[in-house]
Amino acid sequence: MTNRVAGKIAIVTGASRGVGRADAALLAAEGATVIMTDINAEAGEQAAQEIGGPVRFVKQDVSDEAGWQSLVEMVEKEFGRLDILVNNAAILQLADVKNESLDGWRRVQSINSESIFLSIKYALPLMEKSGGGSIVNMSSSAALVGMPHFAAYSASKAAVRGLTQSVAVYCQKAGNKVRCNTIHPDGIATPMAMEIAEKTPVIDEEKAKVAASYMCTAEDVAQTVLFLASDESKHINGAAITLDNSATVTPPYL
Image (tube, rainbow, N blue to C red; front, top):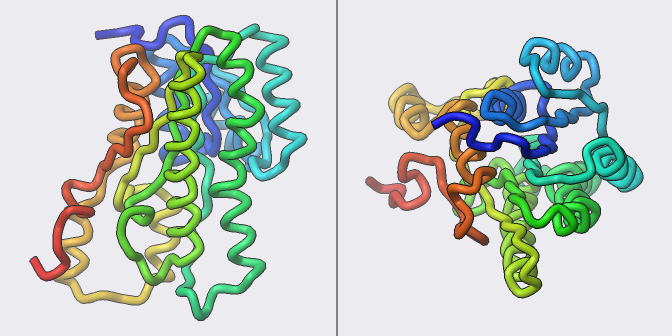
């Protein structure tokens, strides 16, 4: 099947590398016009050039409210619609609850969860005017199980899940044909994950092999994003889709 999102207009945040870049590339390959955003302008511009086709890069700090307003206004002015919103931008911060600072906590929440509130607040009216669409929010297995080394991150991703459910029900009750779902990967083989792995307390080789068995690739996530963005998933709303090879349903003693 090709052109699964032909003619659709999409925003993908955190698109300069990793999952966001893979999402943007696959959506564009399947027919969407993609507005890629990231705070790293140099890397974002390079990614857009390398992907080619119907993509455009816009520098964005996802935690900035005015930036969301101007981005959505630009999309409406230039394209007249918005069909797909992929909230991918996030930071992963290593700290347990005793060692996390209040400033660190607030930074993670502003980028990982408040940004998604802002994106939906300002993008939803345009999606409603467009006749419907799909919002895909990147959450994590950390929203579903306890991860002691990532206290702020886990809380932020749980907030994403809670907001997604609220938005999904709101949209269903409003009859606006907008759907909102979360994706919950466990580990993903991306540069951000590798950077954090270097700072994480060392575990033994056997445990490392077990952890690796639950990891997916950025392309695995992109395929799921594509499905949720397409009309193939038109009756999926409010779902939490795990990409973890059973990690969140496996007792730790097995």
